Image 1 (cartoon, one colour):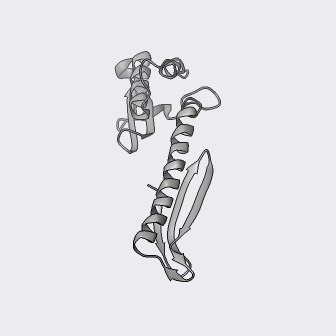
Image 2: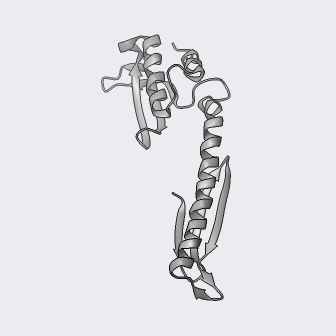
Image 3: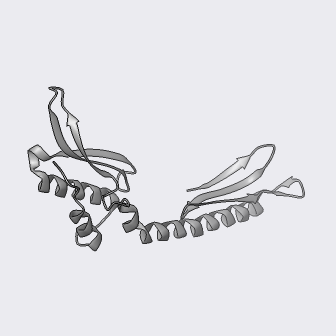
Length: 158
């Protein structure tokens, strides 16, 4: 929720702040009337206005994120944003090729990072496992067009 009660010398009231489609919306709902602080029912009405405005912005934010989900999954070169091909240096000094997945998980509400070794799984299976992990955390269904497009976006390895 992005409604915050501010109580300082400069302002007393609620601030609603959300970013929608790259634009910051920041709006204030005062809890003062002619210098006096609002109490009880009047305060509750202003709080409801702030919460209602936040709900409208949250809905716009969800709609925008859903509409642009596919665009946000890919970089301009066609590779998947959040899955990298790397050569990992082991403690022994050997280089191991991996697909590393690093994404902000919608499921776990935190950033997750995992990797899949091409040596252990083979490049196709490692890519498939990386896309599975990515899709799980980004809430992309396996039978969707986007999922199949992700599978086809495997970078050149070797």
